[in-house]
Length: 276
Image (tube, rainbow, N blue to C red; front, side):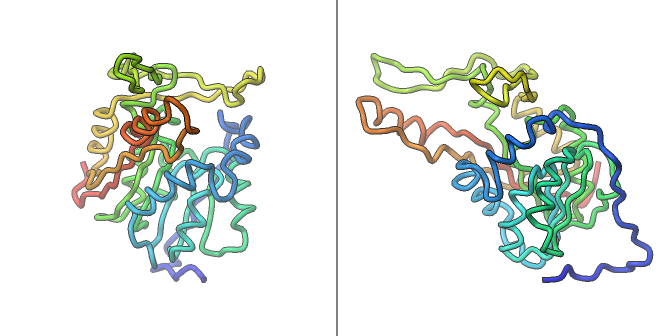
C-alpha cells in the first residue's frame, strides 16, 4: 500500500539524516536484535505489543512515529493494522540498519538515525500517533524525549509509552521475597524516590564488560516531564507478567504475586492543543 501524498510537496523537505556517533546500544546491537528479533521477545509478543496496540487504538490510515524504535519491532503490527505511514527514529545506526533490512519492501515504512531526545527535521507536527516502547528508562534526557514526542504530533494526536514499572521494577533496588509465616511472595522495594543511573550488563553470566544504563525515575518525574511537554495522560494500564511457575509448593503464592504486582506501566497520552 503506497504512502498517501503529502500536502504542498514542493515546500516540504525530507528529514536530513546526520551521521551518528556510536551509541551505547551499538556494541550490543547484534545481541539485542537477536533477543527481540522481528516479532519481539516473549514479553513483547505477549504483553508489551498488545498493550501498546490497545492504547493506540485504531490506526487505519494514520501516520505513526516510533521514537527509540530499535530494530522496528512495532512497525509490522502497526502496518498490518492499516497504518498509512510509519516512521522509526533511533540513535543506533546498527539497529536502524536491522529495521530497514526487515521492512525494505514496504514503502510505508522509513527509519531514521537520529537522537530522539534532540530536535530534528523529523519533528514536524505531522503525525497522528506516536509510540515509545521500553525506552523511557534508557534515555538520560527524559524532558527532551517528551518534547520531541509532542513536537512530532499534530494537536490532539495520541501516543503510547510502555516502560518498566518505576514503582516495582528497579534493577538491584527491587527484589522478590518470601514470607514464610504468611506463605506469600512479596516485592521488596529498597529505594524509589531517588533518581539513579544503574549500569546493566547486557550479557548476563558472560564477562564481556558490555553495559547499558537504566535511568530510574519516580513516577511523578515521568508525569511531570510529560506535562511540561504539553502531553496529558488519558489512560493507563499496569501489565503483569504472563509467565507462571512450574507446579510446586510455592506455585500458588508465585502465581498470585505475578498477577498482582505489575512488570510494566503503559500510558495513553494526548497532545493538548495548547503547548507550554
